Length: 118
Image (cartoon, rainbow, N blue to C red):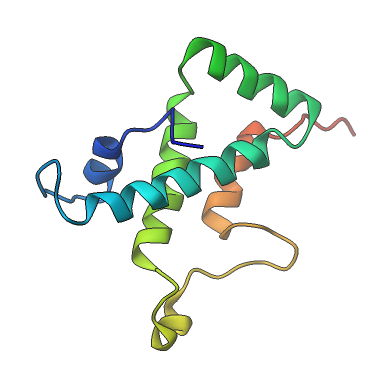
């Protein structure tokens, strides 16, 4: 699934990358953007209410700005903590047990969770 809510330029701006369009790093960054957005869309859509949100975003061809921010944040983690440097394992974002993303991303994603009544 190619990213449909966040553009490569939005991610480059978020990461403060000033490389021109067509730069040699663009395909790799696009791959990370696609993966980040797909993972987050799947996460939001895991419940009926979340699936309805995602369906609405697709119909409108637009996601809320806070979701765009979350995609840029996760893409930034994928870009910075590439996973291909075994020496960098101590510098990766931490994960809480049982959570799919870093605490920062999980905190932002809570905005899209189903409401809970006590």
